Length: 230
Image (tube, rainbow, N blue to C red; front, side):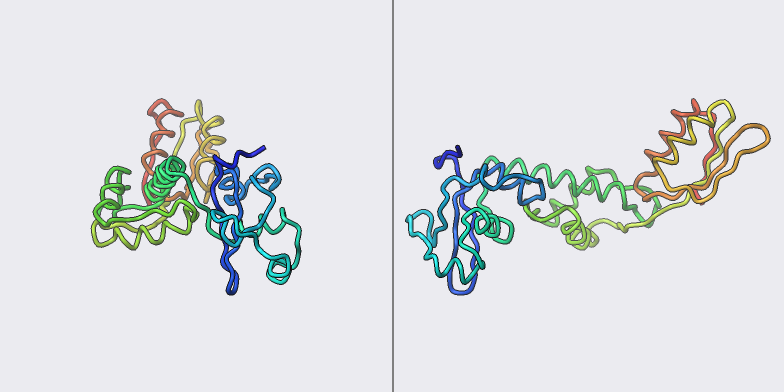
């Protein structure tokens, strides 16, 4: 049973009314984020309120007219999924840190400095975000926030999303294993086996992954491979 003392409020404004419900914070956030959970394990009180703190219960006719049902769990899930979720202080801090890392990592892996054609280190992206006073939303997805962040940091550092093509030649003794690992890492544009057993290919990848790719190739070939940025 969810403890009322440890619950938070999910709220939704529909028309002239506010509808609120008490929910367990971790489970509610997980469900809102897309995980498959039973609403019955998340709701703390099987009651829909106009004002949860005041204990002001919503009228059945208002609930039915607004949501098309009086099923408490179904209504509570609609409130949670389409409304605002109150987060605990600790939960908000943890989620913000995690979401910020995800945004920085995504940009670092997919963007470059167009002046040097080299990736930006995550620390440089993080510093630019701090200078731009970016506020990450703990609820919105990483994809939704990346474009906002990119627009904000472009005046501070030269940056853009780009893909690159890299030619690679792997000596025969390493080619078989390298083929599998490289084809998982990047998109194969061209590839063929040479008469001496070596493997040559042209691969496409997000520009920010170049250094990771060169590191993988060196590891697979013990430094004997050849690469060329096209």
